[in-house]
Amino acid sequence: MQLSIPQFELVSNMFSFTIAAMGAAALFFFFAGGPLRPKYRIAVYVSGVVVAIACYHYFRIYQSWHTGYAITGTEATAVYQETNTPFNDAYRYADWILTVPLLMVELVAVLALPVLLGRSLLTRLVIAAVAMIALGYPGEISAEPTTRWIFWGLSMVPFLYILYVLLTELTSSLERQPEQVRGRISAARWLIILAWSFYPIAYLATTFFPGNSTAEVVLQVGYTIADVVAKALFGVFIYLIAAKKSEIEPAETSSLNPVLA
Image (cartoon, rainbow, N blue to C red; front, side, top):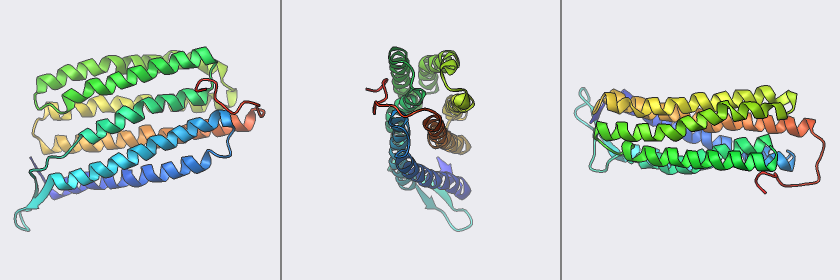
């Protein structure tokens, strides 16, 4: 596959931006979590872990992008051509298999639901998240459109289950939350739903246009934007929820979140 110079640089710049965004977000979450009440502090620290993991993997993705393509041709006809070292998109899945379940952990942790309800919700969401990523990977690395469609369909089953839980059980849990934070929790829920909904669309870009450079750029840029929204921006909402709940709730004697204890 060949990429024009603007196509290659667009993807490269998006990776570079994401490294900076995830790194800055990690520093913010780790420093900002300290003043919060212990019950909610863990949610913000998990947000920091999520973006720190993503920062590392985007650094590896950036490196792989630059070793996977090399500029060829004269100044007038210069393009980026694939090298003998293929771009390793598996770094994304190494990131997602860790960070996607952790996104569910930070969401449930900040809700501080009753123990049995919170643990049940967390267990189901984490299992579904792992299944979604594991089922998507074989299709991602396959050059066969039929295989890609099959694993896309399989990964959509746990994906739709997660959306169902977020839209139903999480909605019902809003009644247990202080009125001052219900709007923020609802916004965080819709943010994760909208961000995650873009992944299956980007996943199919190279299926509809196999070997097309524009499709590859759409795939990489789409995944990258969705990652920034689903990890860094979502983490900001988790912090805002935790900060408000720490402000309005009285100090408690327990230093642990009951769901995660």
